Amino acid sequence: MSAQQSEETDRPTPAAAHHDTGEGLNTLASIARLYPYLRPALPRIVLGMVAALLASVVSLAIPLVLQRLVDGTLLHRGGDRYEVIGAAVAILVLGVAEAVLISLRRWFVLAPGTKVEATLRNGLYNKLQHLPVAFHDRWPSGQLLSRAVSDLNLIRRWLSFGIVLFVVNIVTIVVGFAVLFYYHWLLAVVMVVLSIPLWVAGYFFERKYHVVARRSQDQQGDLATAVEESVHGIRVLKAFGRGRHALQNFRAQAEELRGTELEKARAVAGLWLWLLMVPDVAFAVCLGLGVWLVSDGQLTVGQLLAFFATATVLRFPIESIGFLLSMTFDTRTAVDRFFDVMSTPNLIDDPASPKHIEKPRGELVFDHVHFRYEDSPERFPDLVDGIDLTVRPGETMALVGLTGSGKSTLTSLVPRLYDVTGGSIRVDGVDVRDLTLEELRSRVAMAFEDATLFSASVRDNVLLGRPELFGDDPATKKAADAQLAEALEVAQAAFAYDLPEGVETKVGEEGLSLSGGQRQRLALARAVAAKPSVLVLDDPLSALDVDTEARVTARLHDVLEGTTALIVAHRPSTVMLADRVALLENGRVTDVGTHSELLARNEHYKFVISSLEDEDEDDTGRTNENQNEEVDA
Ligand SMILES: Nc1ncnc2c1ncn2[C@@H]1O[C@H](COP(=O)(O)OP(=O)(O)OP(=O)(O)O)[C@@H](O)[C@H]1O
Image: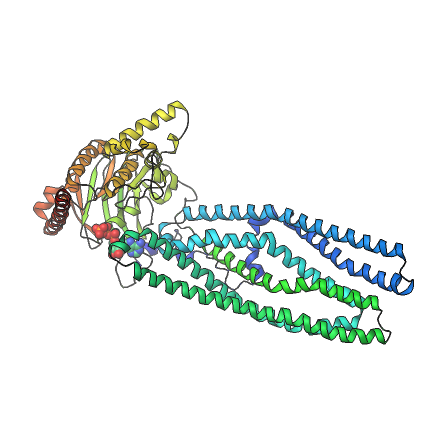
């Protein structure tokens, strides 16, 4: 850890942040963390439970009517016709009431379940947008995808169905056993004692299933990552003939998941064995005992009949407990996985009392800046090891250094994609950490070598940093068209007008495929259109051919006149664009000056530039060879 870092006591550090993983919580306490999201839906869920409870009470009342019918009318009053009809009507009414109450339960709980799912999903997406890049470096996309889709789906099903049935079935079982006691205490005691193995099996099931369920859901996330990566990298896999190898890896992962699923199924099957066997054994023992009690005169036939009718009503709640338990533990795992993300502290956030840049001029100052990646081994020095550099307003500064010297890393500190671990970066005299992220990122725009385009029109992609230019009124549209035209012209991206639907053509992953150079030019146009006071360009011209690069460079030079620019340069031609050059070496800026000054006085600079020239010639040679091959073909 650098000296600066330990001096920065007022800034939060990852170690100081609280991360709630749910470990050590019991299942209910873990799920209870959903309460803030559940609160609006609770009234309907409770109403659904009440409807389901009433349905259970009604189903338990039917045996009571049967008992009255048998003991009263059938055995003692010789089967009075009106009493039999009355009992039949009562049972019919109770049956209809039960059906209506069950429908009501479904109606009450379905809508809030989907509402909660949508709220959770929006919350998760929002959190993912706010979490810093360091979080996304660590988390595979499939893990996030499986949380956003299948875990939230599980939670919804549990809310709409699992929790209601679970509570209602437990209450039904308790009330049902009380009714059994009412019919005959000895039979009920036998029933309770014989069901003890069930509770023991349930206890062991909970301990085992929870662990396996977590493993299974994590493996599903890994599998989603594998699919995502191979779809994303399908060209590389095909070009290197590695499809079979990728398939083997995928099979191994899928097989591992299958093994875990089997383990889960075995745990559930073990519980089912007890759930099915115990009631059968209990029924058999109670039947024998019941018949003896009737013959001994301690129990009426009607009571025995009602006892078994009630016990039959209780079978479904008892049998469903296994399924509902596994569903509850799956949900607990889904909730834990949801909060793994939601409780990750966001250390790159707006300050408590933000400052504001009154008069933007575009001065960029690196003041003894230190930075190291979180996973960097202790024994390594800071990657950025005390950089002091001032980029004057309106100046274009090129960053030059050997590959891996930390140029991209340094540029990413300016818009706070990562936070410095020591020192500070100031824009117009204000520490970037004292600005709101919105203000900082409207003042600083960035274009990367790896140009990302979203599945949206060219217009939407290029004007991404200008939300005020999205609107239907004619004045806004006119301003947007003018800004778009200027940015496309500077980035030499007029090809966009020739696309099938012009600038309204959808590009990106689900749109038209563009070449690497075309994508880069649109990404550059996006940075230019943002009209920032500081433009940070991380080698944004690498995929352009030499002529296009020269044209873009010339136009950028005009546009950059009033804009401060920090450009990572991999080509001598990009270096020429700059007013001054900063040479990066061993995590420090070791020299700053014009290109010719550095060439004249700095041996390391000469070496770096000559290696850039070699690379460039290789690239140009390759481009020319490709062009020749195309001509030959
Ligand atoms: N997200 C990350 N997590 C951990 N280490 C990283 C991360 N990104 C980059 N690094 C490491 O930091 C070092 C500097 O990388 P960086 O991309 O900043 O160098 P560069 O000078 O821009 O390289 P190049 O000229 O090849 O683009 C490299 O050793 C790289 O492995």
